[in-house]
Length: 461
Ligand code: SAH
Image (cartoon, rainbow, N blue to C red; front, side):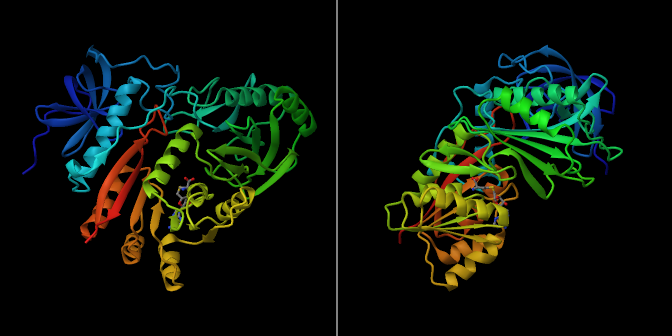
């Protein structure tokens, strides 16, 4: 029997919005049939046009607000509707935080089967000023009659929309992109054309150390020979007195991947530096560094607090990246072992350990699920294990190994509440561990992304 779908494509209907989906679409029911509507908010009555129907749910477009929510905000960015970068600018920041907190709870309960009445759930840490927080920008460059343009890709296309400012970027990044456009146009530096795979300047990447005030500009180019290089360097170094590094990255491949294999320093240093807490980090053109330094400090402080180190512990940091969490932990542990699959990141991690004169950390390249069993074989006994996996969560083999190692505490740092909940369930189902604390951190205001630190503790028998 086919279910009755009460609407058809292109129907215009009145809809009451009751809820938000995980990607912050408003959810309303039309004669029981769920419709997802971008930019609609709970409590609103809207006029909507049906875009697509599936068996159990459909999508509709917001046409008009018949009864707007009191929490609705006018998005401050004029390009909000066209750019896919932010998803929550139409929501008051306090509502964004509530949305994220609720989503973490519902994932833990529904997917994780966790009874939150036994767990200390801390209110999400938001930002006092939830704008201009990013320390890294990467902008594709194109060309129009007036010269170079740069901005973002129109939804589902690779047409570049020119952008003067991005409100979640540090102001300096807007100035850098603008300067490269103006100076590059004046010097006749050609932009790259994706369709014909011709032209030169592909992307401008800017990185900024919030604590050190050091700026790096990376120019990604299709080819090595840089036209008007000297003029560009002279103009940029004059324009930005805090510029420490200009790097050319060469990417001649026909690809969506921004960076190519080869980088060369055009001017200045190969690195800029920044600090988080007491730890100093070297940031190269391609190395990964958390994009919101203010909230990263809170995230790592919470991780350290949950690890509850007394000074004599052995700690494993799985998925360690450039060793940021490992070095934070090493301040209070006897010995830290970090594992990371990207060899370049491990090189950065080792350099960062030296930079901070830390000798009680060891970094290894490889998959966490393959390296940890070897460490157990070597007789390494971890008291605390920290994991900070990518969105897809931990490999089940790693979770098994963690259970074999049986540390006192497991601190799980997550950027995806759904996989967090799935993995916590697997760890908790074993019976020896109990979820004790959950603390969400808003690392990416105006967007749907959610970061969380959680603590699992081995039960005492
Ligand atoms: N803790 C770091 C980075 C976390 S991002 C920080 O806060 O900066 C997740 C990291 O896991 C990435 O660096 C990614 O390269 C790495 N990674 C992905 N799969 C992995 C695996 N199977 N084993 C080890 N590391 C992995």
